Length: 277
Image (cartoon, rainbow, N blue to C red; front, side):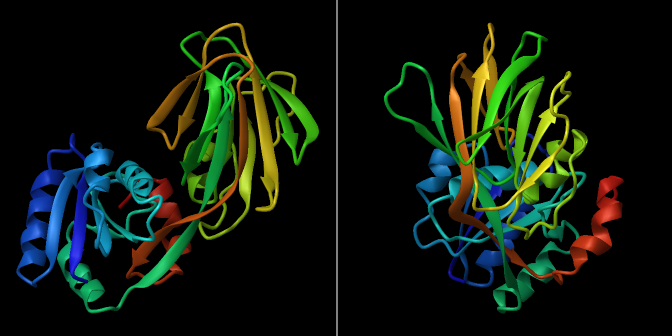
């Protein structure tokens, strides 16, 4: 590797010092580096040319932002965990330098994760906004604490109208996030299937659907008040009634560079769910 970018969480006091430490470590080994806040996506994208790897310093939220930065590039991500759970991060702060040296020596492996791709169309728009998610997309109520009606169809065939706080579409990666809190199942992170589930449904379909990667889901929201769409927890858009969201599995993937064995997901699952590092 000749060039590595480091994205750090701007509000975590330990993140920037760790990023600077890793920058010095890499520079001493002849690797060109750049450092940027994970919240400055445009600035980060401008530095992607010839970048071989993105290191994130923070938690899973920092990785989700990094995934948006590299969405059009096959650049892998390796996360250094300074957060609590770290389902997507690969390295602890204590082992970061040793394991990073092993990655530089070519000992890692690539973990590809499925993503969702959506076309968002408002009632008065001619075109559609394209969005991508590594974790999830959540169509839900906004500031007004009233349930919304969301019409759902799969491959053009009507499924149901959810009367709920909202609806979650989650990838296998996102199945351990908000989806899990809402009662959804855990999928192996490399699974291709994705999840459709309501949030606190009232007298409507209450089950989680595990959908094959080949299907398309259409959601249309009906509400007298402004509602929201949240993508990976940090892209948040206000929605007018009548807005539709067409979601399918994307051809784009998020690539992680790993050093731990791929079997470690099951071995660490219980500890991570209990908030232990």
